[in-house]
Length: 352
Image (cartoon, rainbow, N blue to C red; front, top):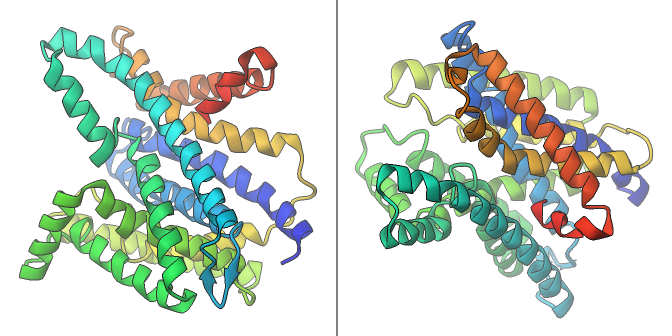
């Protein structure tokens, strides 16, 4: 893959990430409920659930491809460690800043419910480390842990071994998440371990395998053509839909569908298809999309909270709620990214 081709392909990834940010909003807004609860559940648990795994794949591709490898392993040199440190610090600052923002929202809620106390802050601090400071911030926490974990795994093992390790971990993750209902003693033990390890378990069994998949798909020398990738993605998505239906209909799992068997082939072929799209030279507008998608992801729960303060808004049409959240999140995100380019508002860059 030439550098120019890579630059061209990044434009398509930026567009896909931008779209994925709005799919994440659908998970938290359930926009089709007013039309059909069954169809809403299908859309949210299949189409929308592609978004966050796609984010992990992108992160793995962009980070690991910057590192120097030798004989299939990351060279644990000063330059690579510097890149790891810089990336993790940047992501941690993003996580910490947004966590403080959501803490400011939590404090009035704690006061109104009588929960404002030292224990409330201790619980928040524990969640900050073990599960995610707010309900959507788990993604960034997982990303931090998975990046460090992936760096050291790729330092000790060759790529072929890492693929096997990632596959095993993903299977263990499914047994503790989407396939927790299997009545088998080892599965029960895995669920107990996952509950104890919290974000460390999620990072190792969900984020890490998808990051590795994104890196390998993005840097593979031999890849399926764009048409074949699209066809294979379509087939995988049909199978993903069937898997969702089976889990939702015949098991006790009615809500955990983000990481199931056909999530991996769907992401694999989708990511390869998007990488194969040649979309012209890189321009500033695509960087705006990339940065805006991050702000939208981090910001939209706050918009949901604020709109709930409007009398009767929660009783309005679900699609209207979604459109309102999406538009306000988009406008504010564009303003934040735009202002961050000015010297006086440069600090806003830490929001993405």
